[in-house]
Image (cartoon, rainbow over all chains, first blue to last red):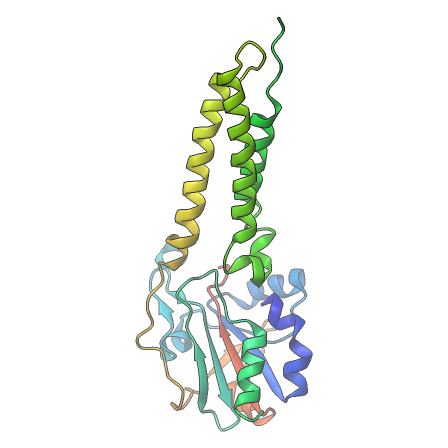
Length: 109
Length: 143
């Protein structure tokens, strides 16, 4: 997230928005955004409905056995078609914003 | 003869502790030291080396140096801490589902309407309309 925030203007310059999604409540995400200075949208999917639709559910991995998201990044074009997906096999290792920007360039963005 | 306090043993152990606890607040913040935690392994190596020097000295020259017992205990503890770190970073953090059902490139992205931090409803269709594309970053959250 920190990396995406640092490269946010590069995404915006290319006409792309970065959107974070988790099961966190809006209040929880607001605390996070305030303390870390994140200025892109953080969306709340408390029942993991959208997370499930994208196929990135990590069942019963949260507090009290709650379903949460596994880390994943999706690149969508303006038509709403998925153009690139990154599924890590390690929660420590996330997509680097540079890699996503390179993918946008490769796709002609 | 007065025996010297065996400094490398304690210095080494402190560095081993730092090697363990520094990962999350410091080195995991930067992708270069996060993906492969080489900086932490270097610290473990440095701490282990110092401990090794101290313990060797305590056994070779017990008339001058203390630390046969404390050095051995701290060396064993250090090995356990290193083991915990290795298991944590190469095994525990990989315990996530494979996501065989994750949507693939070429598939349509399911539309959604979700609340942002201000409680406002945000529709994916609106986000897409105003941009050339959108990067969705799914994360585990802090609950």
